Image (cartoon, rainbow, N blue to C red; front, side):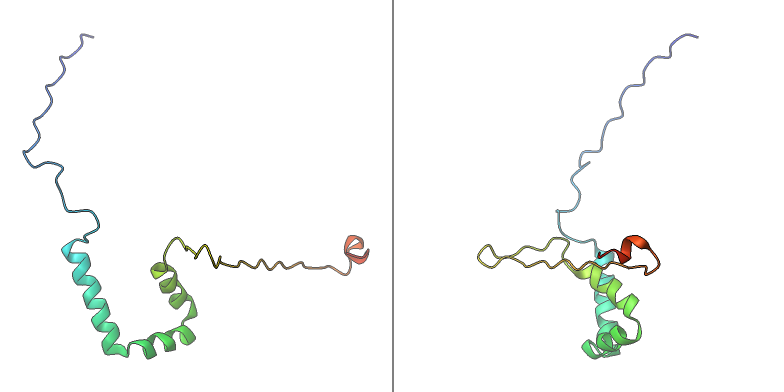
Length: 101
């Protein structure tokens, strides 16, 4: 089968790739955020969120996870303390668990 000739590249529009300045949300995102904050204010603000933390902890913690920073940075003079808590389930019927574990 004979090779087809390559198509010449299409010219780009004169302003291609310029786009929006980095870090500035688009207009719809900004408007949606403003609407959500206005609805929260009408629903009772902090008191509403506190009530949701009690009534719907799963949904509330999902919200908290979305707004917390992805990376936590501490002060070099006062480093963050991390405590690891482990849990071990002991089966009283198992000879390994009865032998002084």
